[in-house]
Length: 248
Image 1 (cartoon, rainbow, N blue to C red):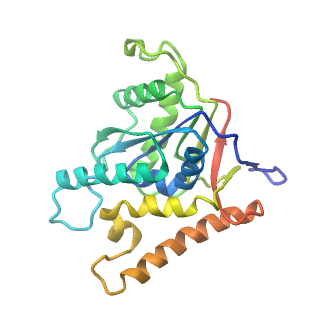
Image 2 (cartoon, rainbow, N blue to C red; image 1 turned 180 degrees about the vertical axis):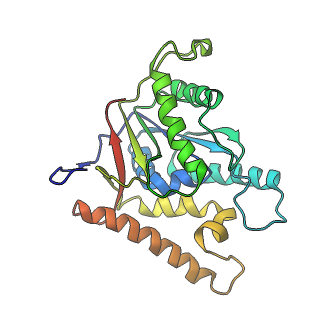
Image 3 (cartoon, helix red, strand yellow; image 1 turned 60 degrees about the vertical axis):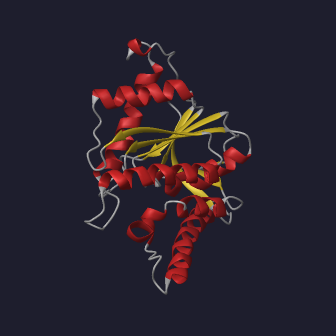
């Protein structure tokens, strides 16, 4: 956002929403409170998780296939908290996501089937981003959005083209749109805590520790500070921030 530009605040409730994350729980971190707000207001919310999350642990003894199955269950629990109608999975291997033609076709098909008014995903241009799946996910979804709108991309799908009204990128450095989320911040927290397999590695919560309650409170406080920082920009108690793309 250029100096002097004013950010946009609070879209009208979209009819349909598709939020895409690289891993289970990425969507909740990036836009969980916004999705909960829209879902409660009547939007049809869909989630798409691109990888199986099979590397999401610090324990070398964990079986990756078992972890992947756990993460599917956790994501569905989180979906219920958010009020989303469905979770779609492409099941690419965690840590190996690429923006290739086959992957683009798969994501394009989900966009064409769900026909979102608003599409949300990772900002692939975020500076100093470490995880390759997050970079790849952002570029993959944006490239798939271009394919989904044009009839000569993947006509063998037999699906009508679809162009979202706009795209919102979460985790963005250049934030120019905010959604007020004071009323649904607690729902974001509940959805994230549904990903219990990630408590230790992502949320710094050791469920077996005597300090587990304090660690959980510290995690919630971290999230609260993030939404408060975004909210302060627009004079509100809590917000989630996005880079807005209107020319889809």
